[in-house]
Length: 132
Length: 159
Image (cartoon, chains in turn orange, blue):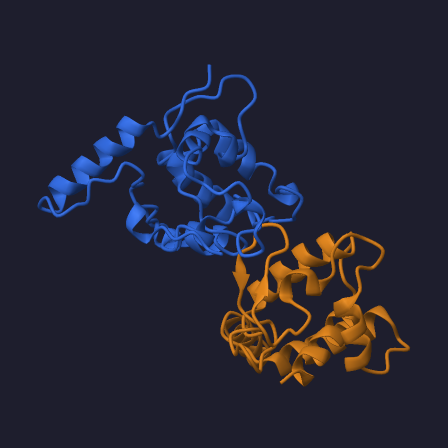
């Protein structure tokens, strides 16, 4: 009991601190298995297609983050320059759970008009990690 | 009636107050807006655009904007309720004192003050240049806008 409590407390503490992109990949994989028992893993190719697609709507991820996620992006509406999205080019990306959650919520809503599945998030992250 | 805020005299007065505070070493610049700081406002509002100074809209406008963040000028800019309330308090405290009367004005670029300040000496195509893209992109010309400095010394028109 005490061990479980300590582990839970530790998990909460760690959750508030910096993580690595691999931590997010693992979390998305756990969620993807729950969402789809036939889940087999993430695909960088699928992630790349997802990143570039407008999904039948107005914008894609690339509209703001740029065709190359390792380069500086420009917000499609305001023109503001955005720091690169690929962790290789910007080590701050995918290190803060609150930020990752906030931006997937907003941007999936804008680009797809619905929340992203764990499969989609994991595919995109897997793709971003291949970009140098 | 639409009142300009901050009005030219008010900005100039602010400049004078700051000049006195800074021992007189302050440029005579009527486009100066008193720089403010609030960490959540700066961090959240500068993610997609410059964190626009609270003085540029009245409190009623900021309330309307912060109540519709899930549909923020065509984008989803939703925040968690605590952060939203924290930022709104800061905006209300430092808001411009004018009133747009009736329905609150949501765009700074539609205020009389903005239109007046940007009515002279500007190339006709300035807003549509790829490096500018939109009047919302203050920093394209006001190169120190991210530090709250909209003065003429840091003003550069890009190609």
